[in-house]
Image (cartoon, rainbow, N blue to C red; front, side):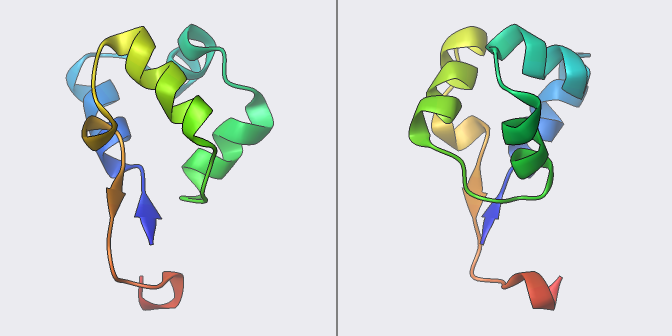
Length: 71
């Protein structure tokens, strides 16, 4: 399962609201909804976030073996 907990943690640590992150990175509201729901998004979306904040994929996404039902 994909999780964007690292991205949300990064935002909190750097005092960036989710709305500001979405706007800063030029991410559409529909795509941001997918991120909030831990659904897969394209690599180009993740790249936008990494380029905007000068971070790596590992800083914004993690993979776990849990299924959504286990959460």
